[in-house]
Amino acid sequence: MSLTDKIVSREQAAQLAAELRARGKRIVFTNGCFDVLHAGHALYLEQARALADCLIVGLNSDESVAAIKGPARPIVNQTERAQLLAALASVDLVIIFSESTSEALLDLLRPEVFVKGGDYTKATMNQEEKNFVESFGGEVVLIPALPESSTSRIVERILAAQGQ
Image (cartoon, rainbow, N blue to C red; front, side):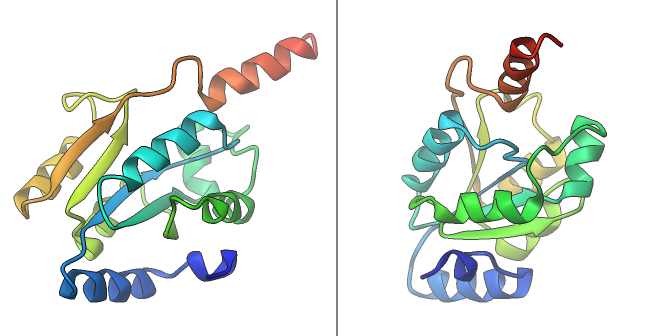
């Protein structure tokens, strides 16, 4: 499977999810901005993939990253971020989405496992997403973040190195 084959539409992802489920396979889903991909992201995605047979990543679009992180972000555009994610062996599919939450993708895919990074707790994560996943029998798993590994910290270090 080539990089571009792993970047799919919602319809393609839903079809693959249905095919996998019919064969008794489990799906894990996660989502995020993944701006300036780093070792923490790679480790997180590897751990997420270990929880099921297929890892689908919902990638925030450029416009949704700007709404979440501010007008200076993303640093890397959505096409390049999707290609970088698709290049990882742990990632099976990437879907770019523009909504403020991943609830529509969760409804479409109905993953057995929904993973969020360790910067969240079950109390601080989006409760609608959490409750929705649990309503159809899915499991919510939090994976601890790699210390000092965040895009915001990387950006801060770059700016500091430039004297800004």
